[in-house]
Amino acid sequence: MTKQNYRHNKGPAFVRITHHLMDSDAFKSLSHSAVRVLILLIQRHNSYNNGRISLSAREIEDNTPMSKGTGNRAIKELVVKGFIEVTCKGKFTVKRASEYRLTFEPTLNYLGKHIQATNEWKDYDKEKGIVPNLVYPIS
Image 1 (cartoon, rainbow, N blue to C red):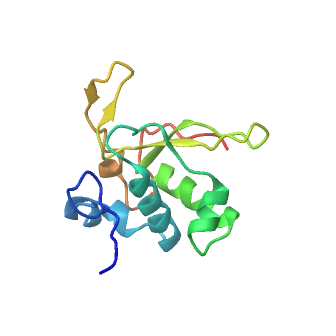
Image 2: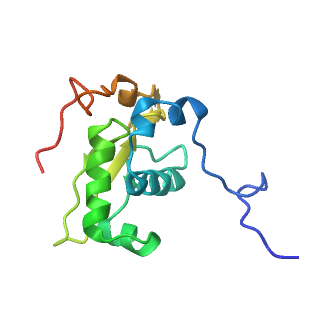
């Protein structure tokens, strides 16, 4: 019998993506690369670290069959379509990865209080390919 990865004796770990999210126009418009990166981010989410989920271009390259450039484009696509928000921009010179927030999951503030999910992806405009009224990062 093989040993499985169990968390808190509640069974093997899993990634939760709701049907509501998967059936949305925004999700259906994602590239395969963006879906892979989104799954990596969800895999790192543990209910307490939303807004502080770190993921670097090198980690994307090591965990998926895509280059750093493709990984960076996938991150930008997830931001533009409202699935994630960049909360802290990483810097290679100090070896710090960027940190992200999943917009479809609640977030804990600095006092430990839950903040509702903002769900920007629900406002995705299929014709324009963006979420209106969303502030996009410059780079």
